[in-house]
Image (cartoon, rainbow, N blue to C red; front, side):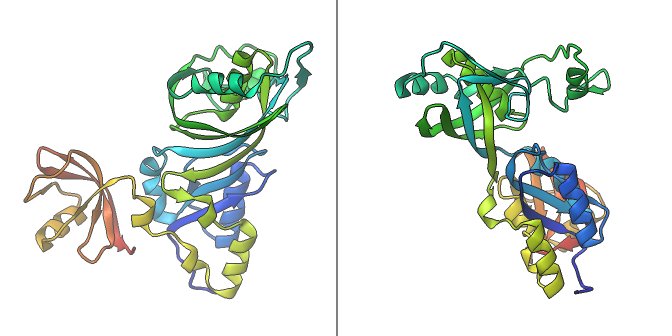
Length: 302
């Protein structure tokens, strides 16, 4: 086994069905021998697909990596409902309903594109008075959850053979695909729950470029795991960027001081790069000044 494993970076992991997101983090900590590991978005045990894992100092990039849109492929089972809105709950078949035709399914799914109000599932990790909603739901208590505004940028029908409807969804942070399945079923009048879910992408990061935990172990053993880390520039494609060209600017930013910019720049959050392409940190531009928010003592190579 290689003793030169990188202590910081970003790994794209393809989660298998079964383990929780916490289980994936725990497994990666064991494989890498690093405690400081986090992810940019939870997947339920029944779900598979992409998890972006931030290792070491790169956990400080988490706030920017969690904001991006996510893309899923989901299979809905029509003609039944579930108290958890997925197949792991108590299933109740809907009696006496006519299977909706494709035209009806297309009309209903179209209503969910754009900004919508979505009521989260009772069985969720949202805290109510310091208690997880799913804990209250399991105890038979009311959760009193309130609707939240989310955005469905794209929702396309991939396949429909009753009772199964396969869709592809691109959505904002905080969207529950289980709730989307439930609400589509309600509007169709036949009920529905989430039967399968796979996360295909987080921002520009795609599951086809990910590796499994089993592969992590293999790459670790043969000494090639470092080659699997995603570059910061690739991970932060959806974030604005600034390159500091002057040594005095680089030095001021590295010490956490505000940097005056020599040219007009956009306003907002940005990734800050050294002229050689290494990531110096993250900052925010306001009134022609760059204010550091995260500074890496040693710039992170691309």
